[in-house]
Length: 507
Image 1: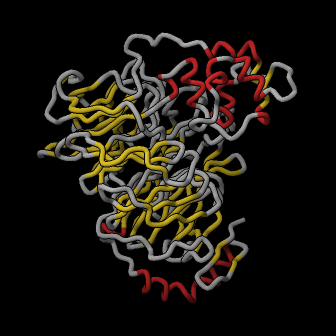
Image 2: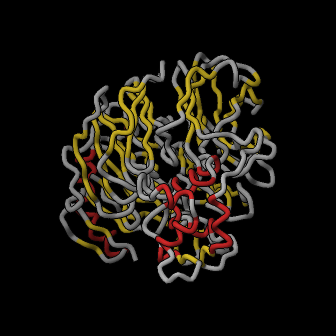
């Protein structure tokens, strides 16, 4: 049942009553919001219409009060970010074994329509925050593309009428952490990350018909969560896609690879970003640490003692409360190890038995070409393998795990799990500041947004932190919604749209 809280504090218990009750105030709201079909009225894909997560010409609301939003609408579970076109907001969700495509009216939060496709099986994901509705929709104002890892692509018009759909699984059969890359839009083309599938690579489809225009093969690629990024510079257009220790650049017209850089993160979530001067890309992933470093990385910084990091007996002495030489999920404190319990519980017994888990304390030698945790700057103009020729600087610390980098006002921002932010000069790599605490520990899934000389950062536990976009670190405000935030916000016409686990908010 949908519950909508309106502008005047009236709560409507269902969609039908809401539609009747909202008609009288709709035209007033429409005038107040001042909707238009200008660029400022659109946030057409993941991280905004150009994929940069910058709200040019916009401003944050003067006050963000969780108790007094413009409106909030209850939604089924889903992690996709809001996509906005004019007075429409598009999202995905899942509920009652169905994958849902949802359209809301931006002026008052009313759900205008919902379409669904069957979810055959809710998989046993490796991480508790994984879900079958993660990719963010994209739209060109005529069509909307909804992508699901367990179903494929569904393309509708703005009224929800089916135009075409393509049933395919864009990643491997093993559920793992699910599928998280969003479709990217370039003119009349849809770009889909298919790494880790039976046919790994970058897929380009005609948005109008679903016809395959080209496919860039990426042999032996494992699943990655990086959304393709459209880089327009120097009169040319390149498609950037990371994963499996490689960042590749592809010709937008035919998919031919232009260049690649290797020895990068293999199991990657963040999306690249670029300007006229360089491409910026990288991440931290537990795939590149082993032994004590791997154990340490699954807990908050400083949480484990040196003995607990290196010695499984000391580790079990702390967390195996009933001393049965196995650790249940409930025995673990809040941590990445607890969140990704299914990944460590490889025999699916429901426990981390000593014999199963203790070998992870032994360091493993990295395989040749297996990648590393790093963030790099890559200069333009390269051809072929440019690993040794075009990487201008790199960082090995303060790396993001899921959150994508933000390039805003000639500064590069990296948000790290645990609640720290670092700011760099994108040209030189020199740090303006590093590891500044945001006062909000925990995971950071949402990507930061640059707006009105500020940077908006949202944490998974529910805090939104606004910092000044400057050489010196300064927190301007902090708001606690006390609800989990996994989706990146959108800013359109000076309005902030934020999805939590339970609601879509408008401020």
